[in-house]
Amino acid sequence: MNKIIKYVIADILRNKIMVIYTGFLLAASFSVFSLEDNTSKGLLSLLNIILIVVPLVSIIFSTIYMYNSVEFIELLVSQPLKRRTIWLSLFTGLASSLSIAFFIGAGIPVLLYQANWIGYTMVFSGIILSIIFAAIAFLATVKMRDKAKGIGAAIMLWLYFSLLFDGLVLFLLFQFADYPLEKPMIALSTLNPIDLSRILILLQLDVSAMMGYTGAVFKDFFGTSTGLIFSFFVLLTWIIIPVWYSTKKFNSKDL
Amino acid sequence: MITLNNISKQFGKLKVLDHVSTSCDQSECIALIGPNGSGKTTLIKSILGMVIPDSGSITFNGKDIANNFQYRDEIGYMPQIGRYPDNMTIGQVLGMMKDIRGKSGELDEDLIQAFSINNLLNKRMRTLSGGTIQKVSAALAFLFKPVVLILDEPTAGLDPVASELFKEKIISEKDKGKLVLITSHILSDLDDLVTRIIYMQDGKLVFHKSMEELRRDTGEERLVKSIAQVMVSNYE
Image 1 (cartoon, each protein chain N blue to C red):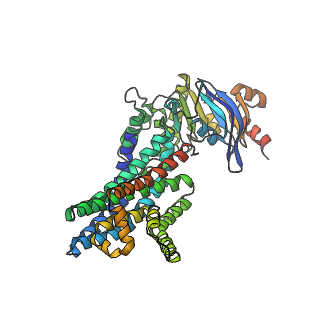
Image 2 (image 1 turned 60 degrees about the vertical axis):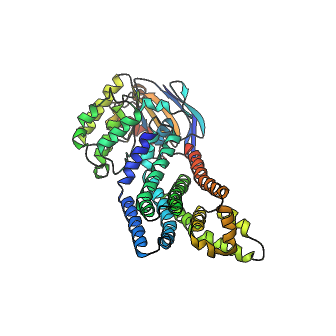
Image 3 (image 1 turned 60 degrees about the horizontal axis):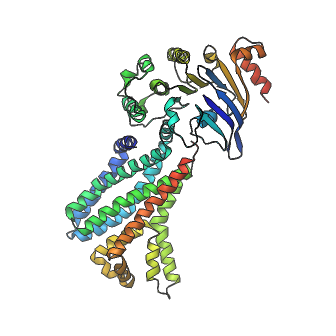
């Protein structure tokens, strides 16, 4: 298993897109931090960039990489290797390369300027989002044989998690404005890893005071250690379920 | 050595393999012949576990291959279109395969030498021509001294010299008691290689005969002519 992971990582890290992605994150984080006097303000701007860019790059890059590796996967499958090993190695390789790129590009600047609990949460969320969206990309590629369809599905999934989901939540909030929605909102937020990460980070920042009553309920829940552990497991589930399901599908897939 | 029992496979509405049963033994060089889309590659892929049949079973040395992966240690496979990670060099690909197979000693490097692949070790896969990639695929298929060789359209992209060297290698391996399965449309290439013929059409196995039987049945000496006769009589 380790052998394949090693080769996948070596292959991806040499990819120009990965270098550009890391460079972009580096440039964004350093410019944001040097533009603002207040590092926590810089962190807020960086948060918005990260929550848009990291899922987008992770899901699109992983999807395209997987489609480009179809023949390589065929080659591996014809070798004495378990299919599960191949799939999980590819996933581990991709997820760790994306995480390494994120860590170098955004993690190091954040830790340089904000070496505290907020900074750690931010780096952690970025890494876990990279992994989650790689997992979702694996789901899309195993389900769809056609490259155009698969990449289309990946873009739609990203749109859904980044934009549509928030729209739906807002719609629900307005429709049921007469009811107390604070608790259901917590449940709803677990349905979207991007939102969950955003809440986790915002709650660490002072701006959370401006989020009104919902913010207070969130702080009450996610601010406690139970809430943190809960959200950690929710994020973990977001990795495990797509990976488990795609592995199952890949085991019986015709190549 | 390899036994197929009633293999069927359907892709959507298309029946690619229709109750195929046959068996292949050691020291044979078997040609899989049939028109385009007759299910040859699917059959090969089912043996390799790349396609999972809807029904039927395949045994390798008496063991069912379903949910088994170790048996592939005994197989060298050369795909129709070999594609390798673009950014890797030939040397790295060879190293990786050695790593995966976990065999470092006693390798069969005849083809690597014959195709002078050693001079190209630093070339990246993306810069290689189709023929050179075929050479790498061929060298990889033979590298680990497998008992069974499965070659899918092996000579399609090779130049005449390489093609001759490759055929010599196949014959010498067959004489060592190995089983070689070849699909090809270039029948003249197969003439001096094969000992048995499997003819497929529309997913059905039409016949599995030895060369002598085929010669006797069709009254033709050359494989090209006998197969042409069979194909025309089956063509609609």
